[in-house]
Image (cartoon, rainbow, N blue to C red):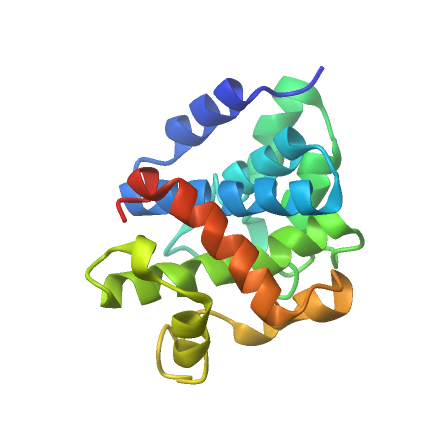
Length: 191
């Protein structure tokens, strides 16, 4: 049995009330769907992994458990619906380098989530500088802010750049794929 998008949304909303965190999850979902399309993979599976990747974050934020248990609660919730799957493995690996025993990504779906998670925050930050209008954001405007390390300093650029090594997508193209995907859901993102 697999999880549907409606079930995934219900799970996300049950555990995450913060609108901005939900918007982040929707942004990552959109980018994951676009990357699945780019690679000729299942857009629903990839999208759901993106949608649920931080589902437990609000419950753990501000506690010591965020660096030990982030993703683990979500995976437990998913097991009740469908057991362990590629979605669970992808969610777990997106926390590599952040959560103590998170596994390193090993396939395109996992690397896609790992790289796009940070990029969505950077794109949102660029949109906010442009009067919260993502429609006027360009790859060039993202690249200009990319060079300013103090801008959106929390967006781990090294993590995003792994798109070149592990996904074989040049950084500018990766940004373009993500930006276009996010622009298509601008109203859901409040941008």
